[in-house]
Amino acid sequence: MDKKNIAVVTGASSGIGKEFLKLLLKEQELDELWAIGQSEDRLKEVKEFDKARVRIFAMDLTERKNLDIIEALIVSESVNVKWLVNCAGYAKFCDFAGIDRYTSINMIDLNISALVAMGLICLPYMQKGGHIINMASQASFQPLPYQNIYSSTKAFVRNYTRALNVELKGRGVVATAVCPGWMQTRLIERAIVKGEKGTRVFPHIVYPDVVAKKAIKDAKKSKDISIYGLYTKLSHIVAKMLPQRCMMGIWLRQQRLKNTPKINN
Ligand SMILES: NC(=O)c1ccc[n+]([C@@H]2O[C@H](COP(=O)([O-])OP(=O)(O)OC[C@H]3O[C@@H](n4cnc5c(N)ncnc54)[C@H](OP(=O)(O)O)[C@@H]3O)[C@@H](O)[C@H]2O)c1
Image (tube, rainbow, N blue to C red; front, side, top):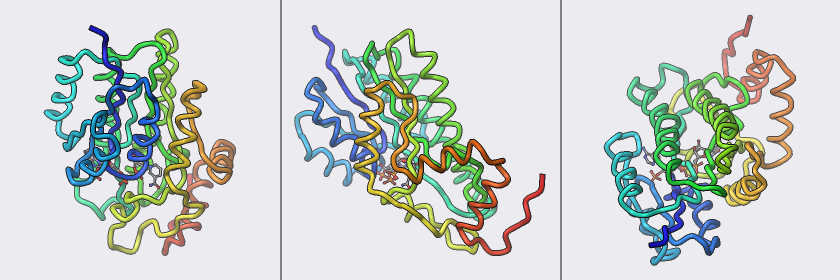
């Protein structure tokens, strides 16, 4: 029996994950698209895009038993994973004391551990021509005070994905880290925590559809990193040239954070 070609998209119930799913539906070779998210209601809306090809999985990916469920399905059904798109993620914009320990660690569990686990689950079922797209962020370019964990998770994703891409060269599978600036999605409203210290300014914000479109184009060109828009591209270059303490100072001024501490070596 021929294997079915599938795409697995995490965070598909909202934001850029939903946009990736819409774009991948145009890939006729895909027999099924597996949409993973938390909200069953939002996933049911996604299922409406193509009832025959979209399968939905409402689950919390920070729970390891749910990763085991996905793995068991992939193992039991004869599949070729053509695309794995890891979009599930969240942020909290506040100082280190503004969120509880559980939330801090849970952000790492989702943004890093679940993303790595999904790749390790899918890779044995990926062949030449397969793609892994991992959502990093412009936040990966430098340390960001008052979103210290979120920006660090994104730095992990960027470095991890680029290193993985090198390891996958012999297999013909491409891994691409997507590093957008601000996008108009639910992430921002979910991230804002009441309090004085937080991210309040969102310059050059874009809609996620254009970012997803460029990411798929870049992935098909075998690029290991995808950056949409001039502002974010310039930030990438500047972050390579300036010391990180200068970059953090620029960030604090841009965010108009009160009582900004002086940054010393
Ligand atoms: N928005 C930005 O400015 C921005 C910029 C750069 C990078 N990013 C990255 O882009 C990715 C997608 O975010 P977005 O902006 O599209 O935000 P979003 O609209 O909030 O989407 C986040 C997705 O992750 C899912 N999710 C959250 N917690 C989950 C969990 N525990 N288990 C399973 N799924 C979970 C959400 O599911 P439910 O909706 O069902 O809860 C949703 O589908 C994230 O990795 C984010 O860090 C965003």
